[in-house]
Length: 427
Image (cartoon, rainbow, N blue to C red; front, side, top):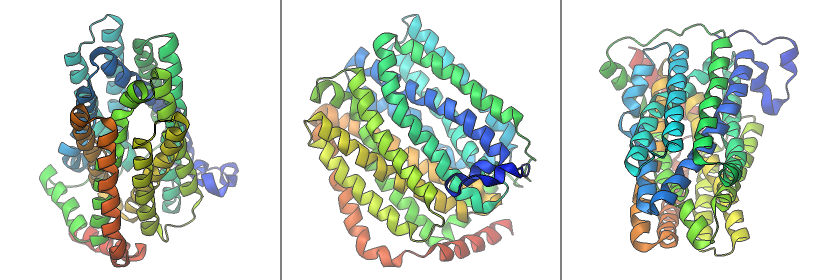
């Protein structure tokens, strides 16, 4: 386990109680810088693709390739992660991500950033993220000493992502206005050093690795899923939510340029508004002391996301569109982060890498599929009509799930099922 928190560190407020742990503070500081750089690169890459090609289909393709590996190989990667030293593996992947961002900056600065090269770089990024994201999430329990603080650590981690999502896109829009895409990519490359340094300073004892082949370890994860029906239902909601609502991100450059007659600054404000809503959701989840009633909260958040998506799709006035983005960001984050908190709180330690990888495969993999479909449909029918269809799909799912809400097991029941599955897997 990680080092014990100091006596002075125990006085952290309840809403940020995970920061009392030294390793988590190191992670929090490093990730704060790193994730800000990630958002700056994401906005700059989307703008570069659309500026060079004017193609919403290519926007969908690059978004798909940056996320698809998490769906295609993510679950198997989770089995491999549980057999490795996660701390050392995360340091290696952070270094490789820095190399990828540096290469992207150099290619763009030299004028070699053709659509084919951007597609290749998005694919490389997707492969690296397929390893980095589940490894980092699975390590979260090693950054703290008390399992009771894990939900708060996950909520604070989401707050980092969403806070950067609030600040990063407007900052990226400003930087694109006064510099270039290459400069934004270079900033992201430098930002990876912060988390790498934090990881090097941590004192973490290596956990006992999973035994057996990757295939056998993978099957243990499936056994856990089969033994916890409520977990499967939570995963289904993640699939539908991110296939439908998360596809908005792919089409934001289209709305910024064509619907609102704006530029990169407009794109930054739209993305930042969604980030502001997501940040509010993270703060809300961090303030919750327990996960009681969280399944119902997830359903409410999914319904809110559907309504906000429909509002945004039919907005031609920028202030109304920004308000819709705030609501959409809140709903998406509440549902996704709330599900992640439940799953990680209930998963046995030995299975956490695999559980996280299944969640991430559903979360980002189906966001990739949804983004690809949205880009293709928008090229044929237009971005507003495409988002209308996505919003109606999500709303129909929420209405279908509503009368079945009573069948969702309470958290304690999920834990019992997960424990049984975990015992079966260990046997």
